Amino acid sequence: YWESKDRSDRRLLFVAGGFLQAIDARTGAPIKSFGKEGLVRFTEAVPRANPTGTPGHIFEDLILLGSVTGEGYGSSLGYLRAYNVVTGKLAWVFRTLPVPGDYGYETWPKEAYKYVGGANTWGEISIDTKRGIAYFPTGSATYDFYGADRIGANLFADCLLAIDARTGKRLWHFQAVHHNIWDYDLCVSPKLMTVRHKGKLVDVVAQGTKFGFLYVFNRVTGEPLWPIEERPVPKSDVPGEETYPTKPFPTWPPPFARQKFTAEDINPYVDPEERAKLREIVLNTRNEGLFTPLSERGTIDMPGELGGNNWGGTAGDPETGMLYVRTIDAPTRPVMSQRARVRTPEGATPAQMGRSVYAQHCESCHSADLNGVTSPKELGEDRFKSIMRAGVGAMPAYSETTITPQQMDALMIYILNPAAGAPPRGRGGSPPPPPPPGQTRYYTGYHTWNASSGLPVIGPPWSEIVAYNLGEGTIKWRIPFGVVPSLAAKGIKNTGSYHPTRNGLVVTAGGLLIAGTFSDRTLHAYDKDNGKVLWEKEIESGPEGIPSVYQAGGRQYIVFAARTGRIFDNIGRES
Image (cartoon, rainbow, N blue to C red; front, side):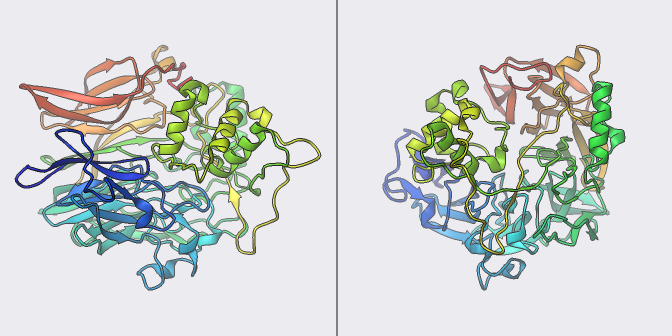
């Protein structure tokens, strides 16, 4: 929302259909003087641009935007940009994948900017309005899990970027993961707070991570409040990959998530026979702690690309200097494999064509077994198509140029019946010729690692809220966050919920910390001083996103998003 100083011009700005649009906030009428006939096309400012799916942030007469680029090879560029809210004209662009002459260009292969994508802000932007500084957390360069075509540190992927909000000029940056091959995006909002540190008030920015570290900086200078050390990390054994030799480890505060998973940590609530099998898998998988590179024999990734502190997962209390972190322990075991893109065989059936479409556009995120894909049968064909065209969450939008209407129909047919997508024997379906030298490609997918019961392979707690005294860097308290319904029915309640989704926190001046858990469909209110439960309310649907608190008519209200019409199994997953 934006309004002029005299409030005569009030408008809502939003992204839909691949365009930035503005409407009159009083009437809902499109503002035709904005952009071209009321529309701003993103591809006019950024080469290889995807329609953004992020809401952006208003500052003065600008709207600052990140983007959703996709996670696979050849995805779009994650440039940051700002537009004038009145005219729609581009105000500035910051290239997160530098071109020749840009700062950071030397951290990439010479022509990487022509084919690498990502390094985008798909999460939240924070702005110091007094100083005019915008803080952008950026994500991985793509492909997420293999970087032979992007050897180097890869600035400005996986950075906290402090940028002049008016001009787009970089003021300072910190890269949390050099040459990321774990999908360890920075996606949670940078928290701007004033804390007492060593006897002085300091304006800080705190950045949570998927891998369990909390980094705290002077938000003006970029100096860390506590030393950060570059420490050696394991080397990759995948052909062509060159992992960066070090990663930045904060000496303080202590991590909020578990960062190693051993055979001794296997879930005690799993059947003993299966526990023995899991033990053998853990012992025979590459497992050297945090930042163990992905491998063809499998790698233990802990807390996992879906774990740690994900989108919406922090809340700051400006009065007390406390920072609250929602964290998830969701280990995965990715296995790298080399395979070429699947071609549509000659004379292919619609399902076989759909298989090729899926392999090209979807498999890098959802894996070959359609992990996390919601069927068109459940959504309805129209809803499925609208999500594919508009994008949702971290999934980019696919235009009719990228996936034609015929291919979209074929994709739905394949998802409804994957077995029918197998190539015919004896002809077709063969892989294309190998890529040119230097363009070897390895793949894996996004997974959660569960036992046959659906419970995680690691023992609880699976999700927690961790409260930091940010000026001291100490953990004041931590509590399990939610329950698993099937275990709670047996009296086992200190597990935390298990559903690695994006549920946020909100802290109130009245002493409450409010959050929802999706898997047990419960809204929780805690005492922010000690984490004690004040009240809990089970609801019909799973709460998602970040709750909002507002006052109207002398009463305080909580509003939150919730999925409807879903069925949940005994551990709280959708079924």
